[in-house]
Image (tube, rainbow, N blue to C red; front, side):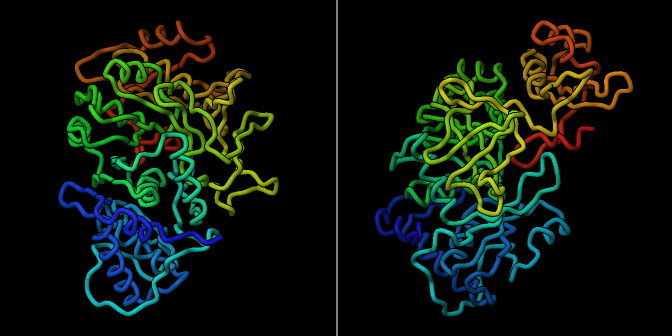
Length: 435
């Protein structure tokens, strides 16, 4: 199946519509298309040809967008990497690349054949998983995966030609990249911030120019702390990266911030399920044409056109390693990672459930729960806690708080107060670094 080049279609149908807006610059689709062609010719001058890999070690912004689409105009494969990584980490992720782009493409250009369409099965990008539970691994996503994800997302959240989606997530992660792809496919506007800054993001939201924003829980909490309330144009804050603490949902509702929860992963090109806007208590139902089922042990299995072909098992499904359950309406709730389950005294404990209980205490800003080897119980439930500035809570108080909400075997046997928790650039908890 052939897919039309997204940017060319957008430039033809809405040439004067704003394609990308950054704090420093705004470009229309017609302007972006011309700049992308120039970027493609400059990549060709570096020896890039169809099928080659190109590392993109660029911060979110116009330079990244131009290089990304420039790769696709040549039929090359983009490999986004976070420029904040060490030189060794960047080299690992870009091994085999013909060139690595580290600044806006300038300099010599070479004539090259530019593509107006792609085969759906051709690789578009190689993304790396977030590395929350193990070392990051590469995932090859096709043009067909990206298109199916964008169309499915629009079906769940609605499609408006005037959409303005704020991207404050790293574009080297699938959640951030997907915003740029969805915008190009739908010919809507991507508002791109180089990094997440709660004050800057809150200002953009309160100014009334943002209709959608993608966040993780910690980002939402910081926005609310920064005073975000009743943003006038925002119709949805899409929350991913893990289950939403009930207390945070209530804070957002009180502040008039409309939420939807989504469950996704790199191997499925971002969104797998998405809740209705205003009903974020679960991760919602599967995207159109996406199949979600549970293994006997509760592992979430995913099939459909968004799933990277190399990630499929012989049964034709992606085995996510995540644990969850489906309600009568087919809505998914995530309870944790299979590998993260704590087995204490023969009982299974999901860390996310304990974290939600701890986070409901007014003094707790952040919480992480893990299992510690224990000679008597096999594993003991342990928590690390970040308190809100100017508050106080003792270990006994927090244990009592949990005991009123959880079965006794789920209550942490030890709590440690820390200044912060290890998280990825996109805000996901790095659970593997807790122990």
